[in-house]
Image (cartoon, rainbow, N blue to C red):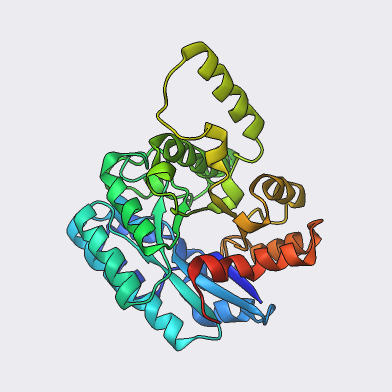
Length: 343
């Protein structure tokens, strides 16, 4: 079995509720307008049929609700989305094995209540947050209660990259979306820079802020799943180590941490959404280890209505120079363990 733990969906009821709340400009640029498999399950199932042993854990796609909705609306739409995720898992158990809760992160009290409801009542398998929450970094003190609660639930927090520049509710589609009418190569370069570099780069920043926050010391069983195999962290780990040692020698600052900084980065989990880049995936494997990598495709982002990222990701995992036991961990065993799946 292959359990895709980082694929995306915009459920129809959720989408309709969202479109009623946002401006027409924002509604026009939602990813579901360009990627039918986000909301059309016939299209999604045709893609999945290429891999009959594949099951999905559903995460609601960009943009985060707090980036485009005021708190009251974000709470309402989050609940609609989470209810629908639970309904989809019940309706299509041969396709979907779990869901990840959407949270209204611009109202922390409501977000914490929704965590309990989503996990305890709906049976969802964790929560998703983004690398930038209303312009605030993930080490902001107001988010610590969420980490404490998820440690209590002993379920993962999915971290999805988001643009660093968003610090308030977006009113203009260009503020948060990689989609706009291209009029030339400058527009294409703008979109490429945001999608290929800024978004993944924001994951490395978020990981660093969490490491220095001491969250792994406060909550030793906390679990974070990063998109794109930890972004640049595995590639630059020796540079991280170099600067840690240099800063330690020169500045002699007491960080208040129980371990050397580089060790904390290995406590994150990474997915395999590197889209066919086997050497990069092996870099992630050598860094995180097979026990901390989970199969994830980023479906349906990419060409061929979403088949391309699935095919590329499956092929890349199959080509990894690892044991069959390690490959099975990546494809399914780690997901079963972390998400407490009973399949």
